[in-house]
Image (cartoon, rainbow, N blue to C red; front, side):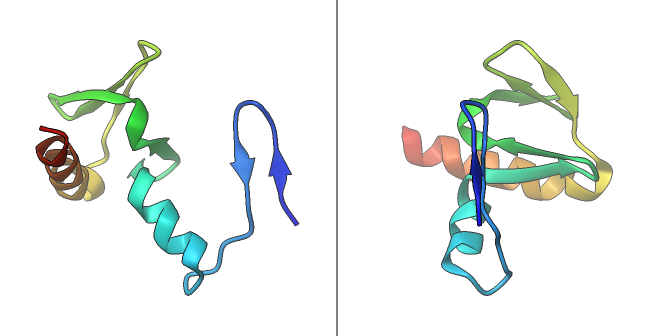
Length: 79
């Protein structure tokens, strides 16, 4: 089953599902308790992600290298 609101869509995801692969493309875990939609990130600076809605969140040390790499790849393909 799944749930959908104006804010979020929640689908059951198993690691081997096609949905899991798609989720990894646009939803990034930036710390132990937070996943963000990469299309809302406007910049990454000083260990934080800055979102279009003006909020900023600290990227956990465990996730920093991966998030920076994904963001670099994403911005490189947009140019």
